[in-house]
Length: 294
Image 1 (cartoon, rainbow, N blue to C red):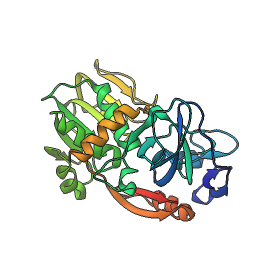
Image 2: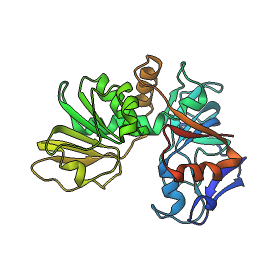
Image 3: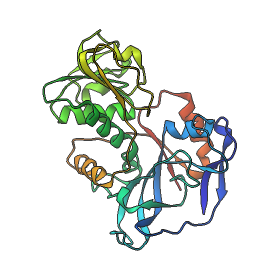
Image 4: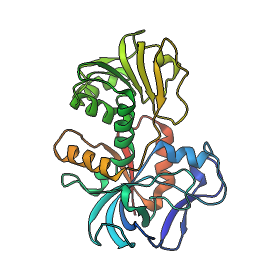
């Protein structure tokens, strides 16, 4: 099968499509025939060496596809359409491949309302947003600022927070106001207000700058593990390390099917054009996800 890997760190040109053995599922694992897989900034981080590692590193965290083989004890059937998150920055094979093996507990039934290309944009970004909101511990009616609200994680955070009854303000570029409000933000800003919010979900990775916008004894959640700023003024600070939780992913699929969440696809690339996809990601300004199709 074809798979996308990195053997030497660098720019988009470091990405390679190689021939690899089709992986076999072990106990409580399933093999998925990949229909679509999103390209995320974390893949660019792996490619460029941000996370280190040696040898062959597979790229891709999100997958939508069909169960192709089932290991012992895995409660899935061959032929079921599914989505899943494959966690890890140092895995030998990721979801940017024709087949991928996934722990059964990371898998959820695919949405009925979205095709594979759109479904592939859900797992990593929506799970990150949902689990970051969990860290904040907000109550309905409390105020939340989402930075990077027009991005993939920020957009899901706005939708989920509005659904949970929080007062959501989205922070993004001025040209993104209509989009951010359409996602459910009741207010929009291009800069924060010192001490103005009960909590901040910092999808734009602004760090201490965003922390200043949290009221005393409020809460801050970042989206890069272990990179949250130090606490000041009694503000609780934390950063989400996304968990491959199939049950929670199933809840997010349900919200997608109910219209609470929406997916955004910016552009679709063939797997063989993965270098072009990395170039496009590096250019910035992408609204929605880039998706690879084998």
